[in-house]
Image (cartoon, rainbow, N blue to C red; front, top):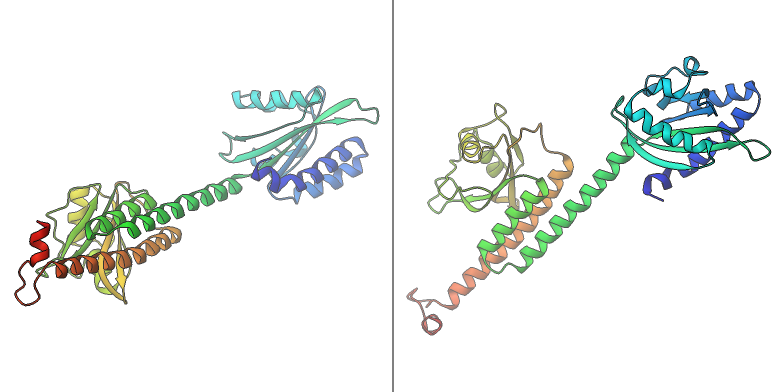
Length: 336
């Protein structure tokens, strides 16, 4: 049994029992059952006889597909569902008249929503099949939830893998490239780049890039650009054409063909060490809170890893350099 079936099995069992009872018993019971089904969210039930004529219909899903429960009673399902998708659904409903029980999912071409359907036979006191019943549950939101959870699992895995890569990084270049690769994977973006202050202090220069050639790019820290704001304020900034874009943003868009950029500061001790740029080729309206939180987590790991890699680099340099003269020492010459 799948996740959706497990979640909805209890309500389905109750619905089946009520609908079968309503079909077999008096008309007054049917009215009560219809009232109940009309108040059940994301549910629809249709009971049909052996000629495939609708004998009972109720629920939100019935109305979603454009049927009026009162008007369709007495009409044949093949006439109501005269399209290729309808023919496939009727094949399942006919199976119920043979005593079979079936469960399946489908996306309606009429509504564009996803449904989980259960068709079951209805028997009389002698065990003879006298009708069939189809109960539909709108699982569109469930499906979105499952996809969201699945996406979160993938994202967390990507961040975890990036953390491992950063932990293994013993040099600054490897650490910075691992940050960019993880950011690109988490954000499902084609380009990610890490910018840090250039040695001469004239702006931000790329220290690692994945998905583009930006080696010679320099981003001035003008007040209008998202890059400058993210670096100076240590705050995340989202930029799209015509939406708070400065000269630096437009230049990066031109170089990468991007339609949207997220500038995320890499912060340590409340000060920005650099800015992580994530660029998308397709226009997007903004960045979700989930993605922002994941990038923030990645940025925190990146700050620690980059700081550690830089420290190791300085220690290695000190180990190979004479403190007084600054020239290579004996260890360096022996290694050479």
